[in-house]
Amino acid sequence: MDIRELQGYASFFMTIFLVVILYGYIIHLYRSEKKGERDYEKYGNMALDDEIDSAPIEQNPKTQREKTEGNK
Amino acid sequence: MQSNAALEYDYSVAKLFTYTTILFGFLGMLIGTLIASQLAFPELNYLLGEYGTFSRLRPMHTNIVIFGFTLSGIWATFYYVGQRTLKVSMAESKFLMFIGKLHFWLYFFGALVAVVTLLMGISASKEYAEFEWPVDVVIVLVWVLWGISIFGLIGIRREKSLYISLWYYIACFLGIAMLYLFNNMEVPTYFVSGGIGSIFHSVSMYSGTNDALVQWWYGHNAVAFGFTVPIVAMIYYYLPKESGQAVYSYKLSLLSFWGLMFVYLWAGSHHVLWSTVPDWMQTMGSIFSVVLILPSWGSAINMLLTMKGEWNQLTENPLIKFMVLASTFYMLSTLEGPIQAVKSVNAIAHFTDWIPGHVHDGVLGWVVFMIMAALFHMAPRMFKREIYSKKLMEAQFWLQTTAVVLYFTSMWIAGITQGMMWRAVDEYGNLMYSFIDTVAVLHPYYTIRTLAGVLYLVGFLMFAFNMVKTMTASRKLEEEPQFRSPMAA
Ligand code: HEM
Image: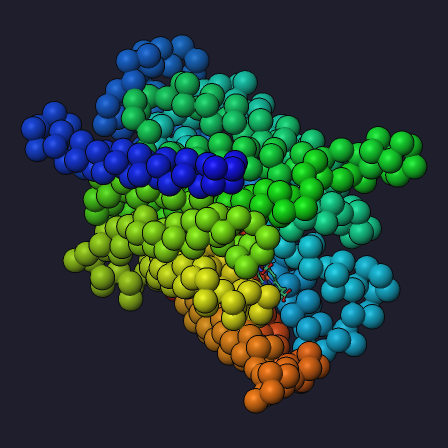
């Protein structure tokens, strides 16, 4: 088997592998929502409610409001 | 929350990039229209000596619309969407503000040098990678600055999760960084030739088939990460925001994202079908191109479904019209591309006018429409004035839509005619037509494309006029509109 053929097989099996990962991801998304662990749809509101002083969907613990007041 | 009422988003960098989007858009499309005219009327090649020839101007057209117009649009929107979805203002960090401005000015300087060198005919002769190495170095620096801006903003964000648009901007950043570096691996000719060649000219580090493969891996993904990924980033923000409807399915958007990332990088070899690259690689390019329909349509359908129950907005708000048409053209060109990537179709389509036809239903219908809509949406927020004229916007919409249709239909007919004529043989197996026969047949379609170019360019001027008037003369707004952009009749 020469290098070109090897590359071909490598590409084929990597594709299969990545497809499995991708399908796994789909299942993961839907399952964790069904179990109530995550709510992905709420992130859609990040675009709608994007005023600088509106409450974040999920607050970044590292930058609480107080911290930024000093800069102003 | 109430305590920092004075804090506002800072749009100074977004504004600067907005100006260059308009400037380079006009320049690029002006040259596009000129070269379209030259193909129809070859005498127009001799207007400006060597500087006015098709061969000199074509790379200027492609590079100005890609690296001038589209990149400026990407950055104008990034410096807007980035702040808003992370809920952090650039005014909060002097450092990021400095980097943002430096990003702009270095980019502008680089763009000027790039335009001048191309006009002088200094070129590395690889499509979309024509810039010679000194310009490449500037581009790399500009790119690093953008990276600092992205990750700097993310570093000080208040919103913990990154909105889907940001994922796409980050993918654009990483994707192009990787592609650009690998495809532009080059050595100044001076060193290769032992001191004879020019220091400013360079030769690729790859040769022959490998060079072609790397080039089209790059070329195709320049489309992916320059014309698709960041424009999807835009539509995921601007359409929901303008319509007041959250994206139909956030999960689908995540899925399409990973799907697109996974599939796109492997499709580039469809540019070198029937060539000397290994067979399996060609087949892989074809198959991945067809699979690419799924994630592309995933995003586009997600956008159309976002309008569910709100389709009345399509008639009431021209901005929604622009964006819905954009996602429709995205669907058209992501169906057309895979068809062209099927080997047997490619045997007819390759080297014909069908290819620029395909390119332009994508860029004119999808990329430019989306960028213009984004700029229109940002204008009242950035300049605190309502959009100058809704009527003008409506007229522009119809004019440009007509132009896109004229462009791609004429090129479809021209391309397929050309492809069929090149391969036609008589009963003895002799070719039936010579090259000049095809040129004569194609002349009317080239003329139609020229007309399309003129119409589209006029539409773009209407857009530019509307924007300038919005910035300078429109009615002032007391407060920022929440969803629908206010516009004067
Ligand atoms: C007024 C609008 C425009 C006109 C009239 C126009 C015209 C043209 C013409 C005549 C060509 C050369 C085709 C050939 O070599 O046969 C071309 C190539 C190209 N244009 Fe445009 N163009 C326009 C706008 C744009 C925009 C806005 C973009 C991107 C944002 C764009 C991207 C490209 C690309 C990527 C190519 C190379 C296509 C290839 O190699 O197959 N064009 N254009």
